[in-house]
Image (cartoon, rainbow, N blue to C red; front, side, top):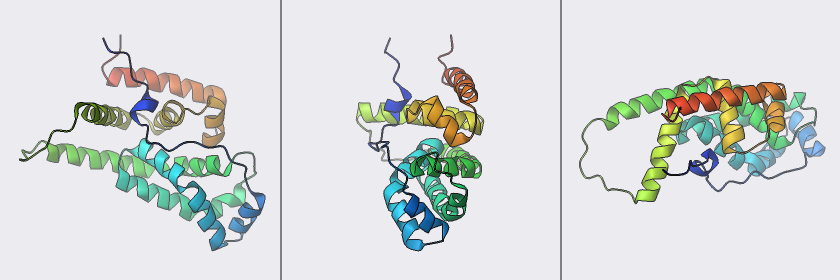
Length: 199
């Protein structure tokens, strides 16, 4: 029997989570609707926000919509920024708050693609085994996430995929650390059942 593959390995996309210092000057300019400050924040953080969105949604096009919404909302949202989190974590928290609509859209898109994929198509080329298996694991995991509440889905992506601590995730989602741990426990149990690995 093969050893279980960690979720973080399945969704590894080469985007590292770096630690940063929040720039109060940049945030002050952003609060004043300075377009160049928004451009700077976008340039510094869009890849991490996009990676989170893709992991959460499993659909690149819908993830782009979420990234767009996050940076459109950033100037207004940063008026409430207290500096107790990094700019990057604050942007992820905006993404979490904006995600519900996008999660539903991604699940609908996946259902439509599954219907289309059941129709016969000629000329398919087989992918190498390792890549194919990884893609299949991603698809299965994304299908399982589609059946989970958004709160559980978010903690799976933040804790298990992005390997953030429960304390960091608590700050991002605005919930107590114990609540995050409880959501993660229930989410992992539900994932095991959905993926067919429950005892």
